[in-house]
Image (cartoon, rainbow, N blue to C red):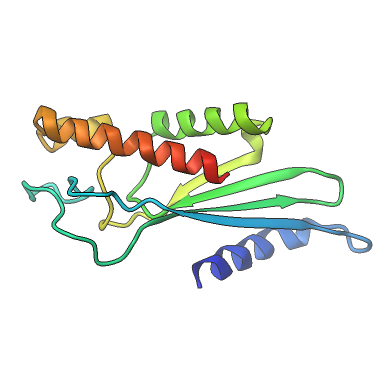
Length: 153
């Protein structure tokens, strides 16, 4: 259902830009599970002083890649996270650009702003007063997250 929604949104936004005749678009979609493997601090739970206690629903990163009739490409990445800080976003996109040859203007990344996902930013270490062990879990998850997103694109 989520894949269908992503495709419908992309078509609604991009269809008016397509030439009226002879236009051929190519699209590819992919998804990767980004649910943490174990307990981790949750984003948006400032009053909570302990890590997650289980999984109700898995979290995903989803990718929609489009190519228009002129060969122009664009990639839209979505994540089931509260958000991604600029430094994390730029690091992911830089790795994608190095691996794919795409330029920054061809990439879009956004998050669903869910409060049922993990904290991932270095600022969360301070905001949640995490000890060294919890901070290490957060940073290891962020690396895994970045690797999975880049590989999926």
